[in-house]
Length: 358
View 1 (cartoon, rainbow, N blue to C red):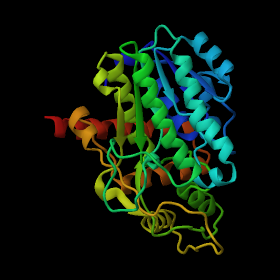
View 2: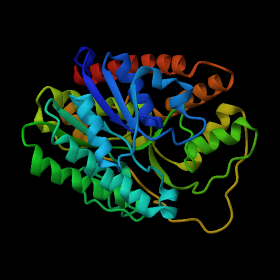
View 3: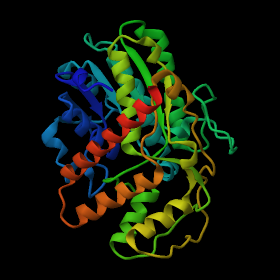
View 4: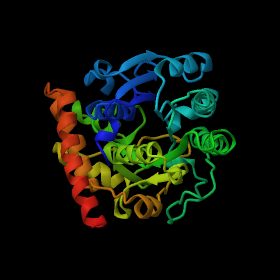
């Protein structure tokens, strides 16, 4: 990954007030990019966006991707060279309660963004962030590759599968050699500053900070856990390839953890409890909505064609999550903690990449 390529680049991010979007906005700001963010207000209280004062680093526009007129007006004003599309309704359980909102945001929001991008003259790259859950999950032990069928049991997962189909259609129908359109699918992303409801790590952190026993819905479910910086490093790498004119990168990509880091939920829980010096957790009673039991990603394409490798073992990623939340709970500066963790990650990533690509 090249730092200099980003200096002075005009970058437009949808969903920059969310957890992953805030991390990306800060990283791009560090690299010298001119970042415009378009999003609703932060979806949680507290939020990383507020805790790390992200609004000070970007041109912040309050807007909804379901409003195509406002979205296109913001894009026209920003004149981006690169677009990262992260705005989404990102929660499986919430999607059961609000399926129309989920499809409107995740499918039509993506269509609105891509259609508006057709009329941006200086655009070179669009990176659309979807999810590992976009695949038709067969609950088997094999990891999913980029050419496996799209699908999804629940409204959230199927909305992301549908978004992937729309991205592919727009890429082939409209953009040609003008701009490269890629989609990226990460695993279960974790990191400091994620406060979302009904996600394992935030639920654990909330309980541990107040000394409660956490409630764990699916202790035996297996997920491809990875630190947020792992996923973002892949997104940035794809954008750099597209900016350089490499249209072979204009396709779908998996960016997941090492195979051994696809772990059951109970493994994560026990290690997070140990980090806090806590013991014990409970399983909630009552019927639960359907959630996938086994999910893994095959990242062979990213390894072979991009030279990308995960740099943080899962145990180290969990240490960083605990470090961030403990420090912030003790009045540490969220932005500075993030900066130190990014510097440490980049050092480790360069070491791993140089070893494999020597």
